[in-house]
Length: 584
Image (cartoon, rainbow, N blue to C red; front, top):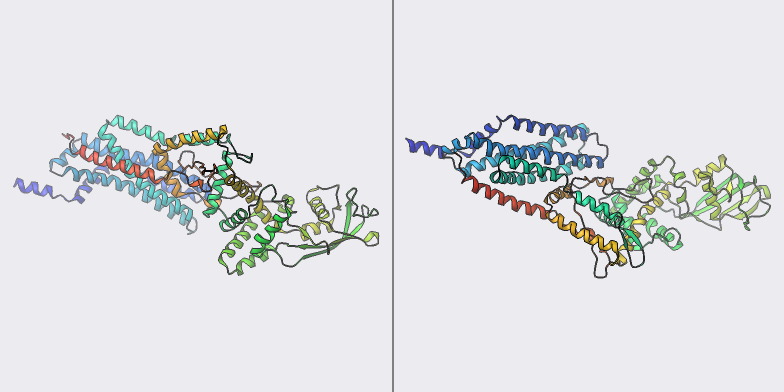
């Protein structure tokens, strides 16, 4: 009879054992409260996420949420489950009673481990589902692909982190006392929030470091990183208006345009018009003719031999102006993009149209605020352009570009007041504001100014040797070497770098600050507490910085591999210890 009963106990299905553990832990009030908090936090963030109007703020907000969720809530839940099964239940003899019925220790341990992992998995999966479904519903049944991407990274990272945390906390509780385990876990929790501080300190110090090149050019280390980051994101199509950006970047690099000569060298200006913009079909093939009358002289330049001496302020003028290589209108650009059959060109034209509409919204009066850009792409046909003074017997002179620039700028912003300017009346207003208003040309010039700083700087950096004997370069190399050694052993930072690497950023928000000449900030979406892959500037045999130096970082999977191996060791060790501890 006894042998038969023993046989029955040995045949207890794993499912029954799992249900037995579920019943035990669901009677624990703290466990239920923690799960409820995890669930409610998901609902709260899912609701809040709908109010993030920009992708960048969504990324920043979600990263803080993930940090709090995994480093605090999930960490505490796992710690509580481990304490419940491997301290509380050992103390109250529940495990001993189960084992006295001759249930295999391995079987009991595995059932409890699987239950803990399932609880963590269900919580993480529920968070993933709730956030995306709530956001989908609240957004009018529109799927947020950015949110889906970062929550997917969170889902995978959370599962891996749960596996590692469960095994590590089990390892601690079988080595140390409950109090010691709690203290160690508290310290580890604190380390999560300071693990990235050395990287922050390093970047702060680098702001004051300058690198000198063989051609005597000086650039800050921060400028170097901005330049390589720019090339990385543009070439990976991880930037707003990515097709247009890649096109401009590639053209500028291939042509080797230099910042200092970009706007003054006539050959470079013609090359940009003929080889870059005409290729897209956005330059008019015929001249743009303007004929306007009833204009009044306000001022004349001193000592200008080309202007008759009898011309005076108040004279009435008629202008005939013929402009070559003008840009098409925005409406024509829209039609051109819609009708384009070549995919690569169509994408660029659509990006250019979208940017042109966007940049118009960033300024209250873009023609006025960007008046300085009305210069390089103004090509006057000298043979067909003239100014006629109807007050002086139709005396005529050639219409020079300098005259047009002074008339244009004075009407808009009051500059050039001592040059050839026109009275501020309705006729002048119509001439400047209507007939000389080229929105697409302004958009293109803004884009050119955005890109030329970064492309010319990249060419300078990669084509000139670094003076490695300079004090700042030596300091940079020493500090970066120390930082890299620290990062190899900083598993907290490394583990988080996996999440940030695969979750990424809101790349549609990687764009130039509208009110700057050329400034783009790539790190504003970063979280100060989270780790990110860090690269060190690498030189070739000629001491030139490698063009792909941004790939010189520690692969985040290195940390996953190390921690998984360590976690499997923890798991094996804990099973070994569990089979040998005295449970009586």
